[in-house]
Image 1 (cartoon, rainbow, N blue to C red):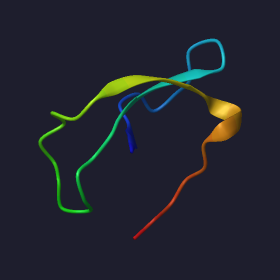
Image 2: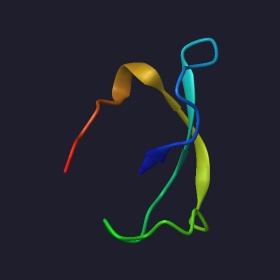
Image 3: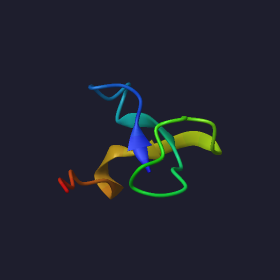
Length: 43
């Protein structure tokens, strides 16, 4: 999952589900996740 916006909107972040670490197509399912349930992951 990757966040589309660098900042939250009223506590929510727009996200896209990625097929894998190399997937940069942003064509997967998308939606909104409450920022409290997200964390930054670097790989």
